[in-house]
Image (cartoon, rainbow, N blue to C red):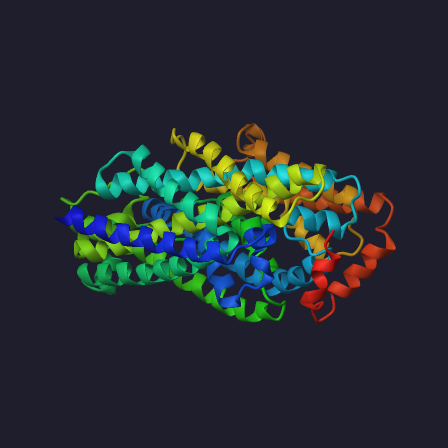
Amino acid sequence: MDLTFKIIAVGIYFLVMLAIGLYAYRKTSDGEDYMLGGRDLHPFTAALSAGASDMSGWLLMGLPGALYVSGLVEAWMAVGLTVGAALNWIFVAPRLRRYTQLAKDSITVPSFFENRLHDRSRLLRVAAGLVILVFFTFYVSSGMVAGGLFFQSTFGGSYLLGMFLVAGVTIVYTLFGGFLGASYTDVVQGLIMLVSLIAVPVVAIAVVGGPGEMLRSVQEANPQFGSMVAGAGAIAVLSNLAWGLGYFGQPHIIVRFMALRSSRDAKYGAAVGIGWMVLCVAGAILTAMAGLAYFHQNPSAQITDAENGESVFLDLSQLLFHPLIAGFLLAAVLAAIMSTISSQLIVTSSALVEDLIGIFGKRSSARAELWYGRIGVLAVSVVALLLAIQRNDTILDLVGFAWAGFGSAFGPIVVLSLFWRRLTAPGALVGMVSGALVAFTWGKTDLGTLFGLLDERLYEIVPGFATCLVLAVVVSMLTPPPPAAALEEFEAAAAETDEPREAAPAARG
């Protein structure tokens, strides 16, 4: 009977997501709608969509699991991410919205780089498209791994069956709904995640005897839980804080800024997005603490994923709530997983169709571009599924690898493009490629510890981001300055008002 209730709840959730995808399908008529929603996204939708697509299974599984196993020393990551998200909304969002419209109405991150820097070689756009294709394939794969783990833990079923089911539903509504389908479902999913991360720790804290008893049990289970430095050196703290650097270069997040109705909407979006994130991260921390206290007080109850702790939210939901309510709470994990997969599939499809294949031929009809986007989603999905069949890494490891790749390759280039007029196409290209290569190789070789000089591995986003930033600046200073047209666009983008929306399509090349 318990299993039946859970299946009903999750089934209702799946049907709602598919219905939203169908609604978005009816509002999507061409390639630009499919990839960017016609630049008419409400800031509330953009904020929750950015948050939900950002957090993925990491928020409800990866972060609580890391905290459950290691204590608040892992909270440095949450601090870095919260600060990074706030800076991204406050500084990057408004100017990126203006600039992408001025730069030939760019609808993808690679096309923005090319148009912003007036790169005629197309090498910059191709390189950016390849970075997206490589790292997002791993990122999407991490979501599919999380989906398989979810079903394995919740229903005691096959990892592969769960993975294919979660991936299948997500692919269907993304395939037909496109950017709007991903964004609208993100709103519902973001609200589900927020409610669940409030409900589960509140009930769990009450069950273990209140905040005081929870803290006492946590102290008994792990005396060093409350320390943010115990067991971690400066390298570990720096590595966790450095996650915040990644925000500036995440295409699936910053594309929401590009889709806003106006740059003025960024203030509203910032308030909603940052508030949502603070509440969710606090809920994840309390979930780990309440879970540690609960399993300490109840030795007969066993956490499903004892090694990584990534099932603590799932287990508490099933142990403390009626099966039907638990089913809806568990849907929050699906929401986190699926919102990220869908957003990343759209961005990856856009890179494949618009920035890699599309640049070599004449522009197709609007209808043809729409279907090219759908074919791109399907192609990337198949590759990600093949990678996810063998689960060789934790969710956090897979996410961390892709996050560092984008943060290192794109982060400095996005910031420099928006705030430094002297950036040149060669500088951006050298910086981007170097940052991506450092991020890709750092953690997989002895470079991660500087060949033994460091006690532990430094997170690859630190050297990757620094390499990209330094080389982009140095090469830009050594090459001829940007053309006059690029400098004029830069000054216009720094202005306080948007270009009229109706003028943008005519500017798009």
